[in-house]
Image (cartoon, rainbow, N blue to C red; front, side, top):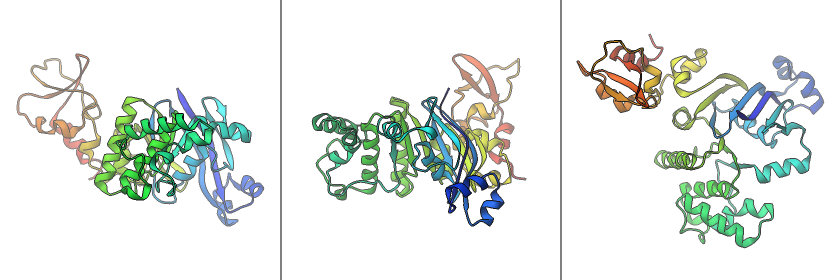
Length: 334
């Protein structure tokens, strides 16, 4: 069941509210009036416990869409519901309660207070809630421990590396125990190795306690690696929404096809995505689970006599013949 539901979400920048609302249905009219249509009638649904990725280049509308979820950006048109409650119609007090209790944000540039300790930064969301000092600092310490910074609570943010500062930002979100995390390109300013470590940390935390996460990135490999589903945006419009393997296997249009052209398919495509029906006379086989990336069993696929079979809970689901792999890894190119 969807925890976050958006319908017709639209945002026009650069025009007075009434004029923006009147023109929002006509992109050409918005442009002619000097406005920018940053989100164009976007429908969105994010399941409870899902890590959902908004993917696109600069100017695609992904950050605008993210910020409409907690109304940091006011939609020009459309509705947004969280757990059935209409966020777009909430009063200011109700909206503050939502932001304080249920939704936390993690930003690209950390947004840490340089004059506060790491522990105090991690506790800030709880301070805003009015939690007693002893309780909020204890919860901050627990969150710092979970992100691998349990011994740095007394340090200043300036004494930490970029990756460590981003961990503090994540700890601040975890300390509030919010069930929804909005993450706006949180790892894009980090070096590649540190970025991968942070992706691993996020996936580990998600496996320990699934949260509903909406994650913005312009890095397609990052999106494919961490997202259960990915929404590809361009000029404020949805180009495609699906799992990584679905998007790779069947791009919705030439833009998406070009967008995914350089993705390492062996790391994204899974056994279930490339399998075919098993023959009735299948004998000995190498068993792999449906979620296994192709890269993990690629070396088995060329075996002359023993095929690769996809098996789950003892049930044979299909086989992965070499020609199926070649077709999948070759993508849609001629």
